[in-house]
Length: 284
Image 1 (spheres, rainbow, N blue to C red):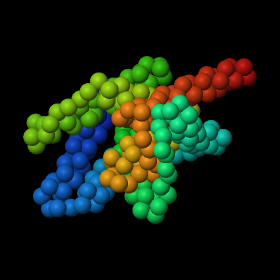
Image 2 (cartoon, helix red, strand yellow):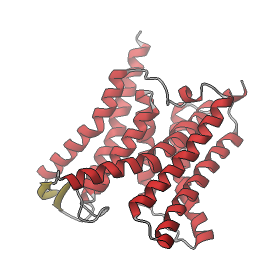
Image 3 (cartoon, rainbow, N blue to C red):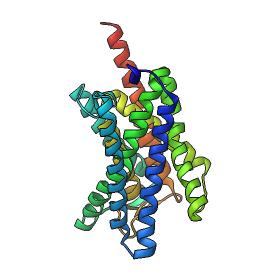
Image 4 (cartoon, one colour):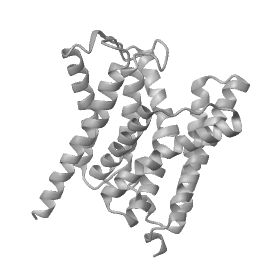
């Protein structure tokens, strides 16, 4: 079948879709906030509806040509419930371990936990927005469609290393378009590059180990919510944080908890689990 062969045109088309969809949805929200006075949450929710809506439309158009597309990218079917459970437990375990070790090594002190209704509602609303505007469309295009296209031509490891580069090119392209057409600023730092590249690898490994793209989406949301409501200590949403603390230096928890524990250690653990799986399968 033609769809089983690698095509650079198809890869570029997926990249074009995700870039344009993010550009359109993101700047629609920006326009509504700046011109019509929409609240940030409402505008971001509408951004998410647009981005996910356009992504879903593309998915169903592709399904007409390739009925197995959902299965191919991990949107349907669960290969192993035990692996899925491990995938779900792992990031939460790393969050707890990261917080505890940060406290014991003196990285944070004067820790307080805020489980008020306002905080829990804020996390829930932000999680819904994160799913619609970030996790679902980005995972479908990058860890789903684009990775599968790469994997038709390259070995898994090569595809794994190439995929995050394409992931990074999306915000760069969107920022460039915004700067060119809407007078936006163009900023891209080395630490942001390193974060996105490592994050992209972690997301793909979660899908590889569990066999489900939904696990990639779940990890994507967990990372965002932990970063926004724990690591950033109420900076993302003013005065609303699940945990408040004093850091040994500014940004310590973003570096230690969000990057080192949730992302880097996830990559290390998943690689070990995948190697164990490979050895077990080879031994049968």
